[in-house]
Image (cartoon, rainbow, N blue to C red; front, side, top):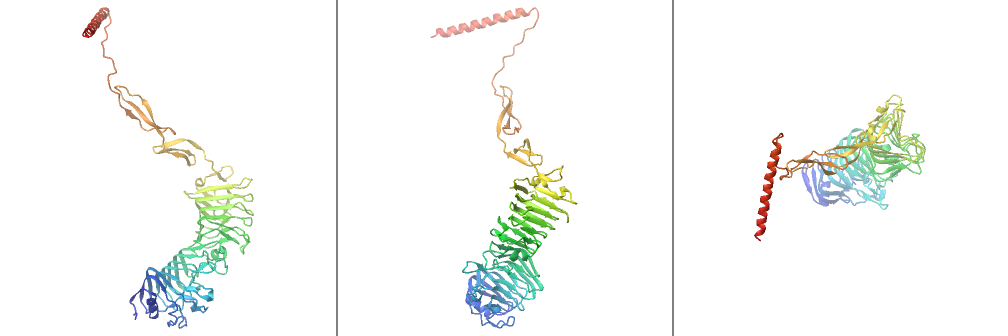
Amino acid sequence: MPRRGETINIANSEELIEAIQNQEAGQTWILAGGKYDVSDDCLDVVANINNVASGFVFPIFVDNLTIRGEGDVILTSTYDPNSGNWHSQNFLTIGSSGVTIENVDIQGNPNGYYEGMCNKALELIDEGKDLTLRNVDFLPLDYEDDTQWSGSVFITVADAGATVIDNVSLYSWVSARSVTTGTVSIKDTTLDFTNNTYAGYAEYGLGISGDQASLENVTIKVDGSVDLVNQVTNNLKPGTTVELTEDVAVDEMVYIQTDNVTIKGNGHKITASESYAMGTHGQTNLFKVQADNVTLEDVSLVSTDLTKHSLDVWGAENVTLKNVTLDNTHTTGGAPLVNNSSTITVEGTLSLITGEKSWYGINVDDKNGAASITFAEDSELSFTNNAESEKAVVYLELKDTEPEDAIVNPENAGLLLDGENGQFVPHTHAYGDWMSDADGHWKECSCGDKAEAGDHVFTWVTDQEATADKAGSKHEECTVCGYEKEAVEIPATGGSATEPDVEKPETGDSAPWLWIALAVLACGMLLTVSVVGNRGKAKH
């Protein structure tokens, strides 16, 4: 029989059931890899949790119990209670403190009362507090309509102590609404609402609830079947990333009013549905940010004939747009981007698209406070106007801000401040003559942008021909830009190429006699050669 404080090695379902039936405070259960089905074998365990004696599928009622998997471990039950009683809705029910569950997968049991779903995969209730869930995946149950649901994590106690949810995934929500004391720290956790049974029901918020819950690196995955506004963005908590797995259409403006959140599009778009209408906020923009430290990444915001601005940023600090497309081709009016008293940083590519009813590409307005857009070093601005009429890329409505403070690092976006009208206009590159160094050549605009960069194409050019006794020189020269390498020597060709030195006769009266003597000597030499030559022939 298990005893208090001991470590128990468990290898199959029967041994797990025995451990549940005989649990003692301080035990550690080490589960070997495998699937553990507790079925209905623990219903008679006297747990006395929240004034209910028994009838639980998987009860934990002792303090400081640790359940740890080694290998691939799945905890589940095939038992269907077909009951709506609170304790029958749960797979795991924890009524004690200091419980740790780690390195396991949990798949709740089916319940016919809830159309075959486990309502709560885990509930912390009664005297439960200081719960730790670490490296736990709550696996979904699949339904006849091909949707999925894992059952929720419900923390129903008022005092949660120091409850930690770390590196957990589930296909449901985490509810900590009952917690008024203590903390529920949730980090590196993913809530997957793609193809989800509860997607589209506005009355069910999809995320994490509770004032005592703190989030760090929590991701909510959604697809086109969710009500993005009422189920997700209206219920956001700081530290959340909303990740799109496909395009999403919304029935009213997406309104981000929570600090420290990210909308990660994965290349997908958010647009207005055919049922789009003005919400209680009284605005018809497609997307609005009124919070600090918000990031939009790899997403397209596409307006329609029912919406106004594609993106309205109002009174917000440190908003980051990273590889964002704002398409205002179809609109009731407005602009792709409006910056009202906010600070925005652009990273990657910001693509602006205007249509006939668009006002311009970007509006920067400081009537209610300082406004600026900073283009980071790696950023660029793409502007496409689909209207017949000309549209300004940037339109500044500045009261107290200087243009150069409103648009920071405009050269990174290809913008140039026009001294005549005080507005930023697209800079047209004008590239000069070839520039070069030892590594290659290029042409450069006055703004610093480079074009036609390439490697040198060298050919040899002779500077001075070599002679028999004198070296020459040559150098390599680029046929494209004219860049020259340092000259190298061409060795002398060698051999005798110069006439013998003959002393010139002196000038004066003796000079003619000297020339006569030389002539006679020369005739004698010719005569000698002729005789020798004739003798040679006579021998034949």
